[in-house]
Image (cartoon, rainbow, N blue to C red; front, side):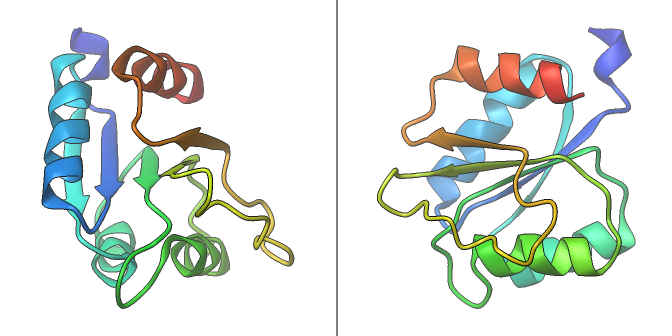
Length: 122
């Protein structure tokens, strides 16, 4: 578990329940977490703090997941991204954004698959 203590994961979702659920699961495996309720808050955190992974929803107020990823890439932040959304929400809107998300997972997220995916990316 100690090898994960410096790995920080930013969780972005407009649902406090979802943010807390994902944060709890990820912290159980020794990672540190930060949270944001929308893309605007998340981008501010990514520009001022160091994270090794971004886990984001798509449908959020102020700045959605598509815009967040676009802004992250345009600001030169090189970070793996996991998009967690309903299948309906996830569309190929990442044209012109290279690279787009690293992976897409469907809500509700299986905790074991989430952790396995995080371990793979980190």
